[in-house]
Length: 173
Image (tube, rainbow, N blue to C red):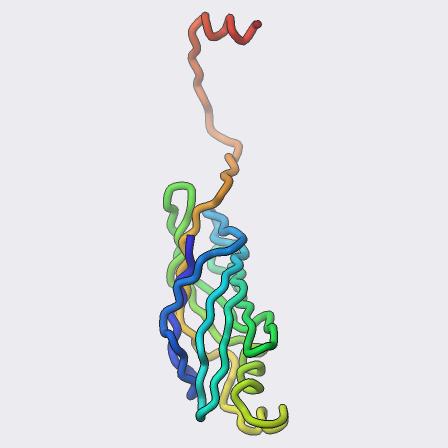
């Protein structure tokens, strides 16, 4: 089970590395709807105008059937819930698991604010004056391949079971 983030530069911010392969530390993805929360650890560096900060991805929340989701991260030393927004994607089954591919990742308003503070020298007022980091910019795409640890069998269908008389005799004992 893993998450692949393909990042791209945005709003004058250069990101490195461009591809993050993250192991899933906790959580799961529903193989029928694609909904779920996945905790992970991995980071990239964001650089602008000679300043840089580390962005550590902590969790990804996926909505059902390509619905809205979020990215939680730690920008510098600040935890930022809603750093990014997730939407869309194609869900395909892989045995008991699933692969969610082509999920669009965009910068959220809290993520834009956190990056502005981290990449601008001085006070928060100077950070907003320096600006240039706006929510809604594309961060890149996300792909998840997840196999659940446990499987739930949904009711439905029929089962035919034929047993020998010896087996029936064992059950009676």
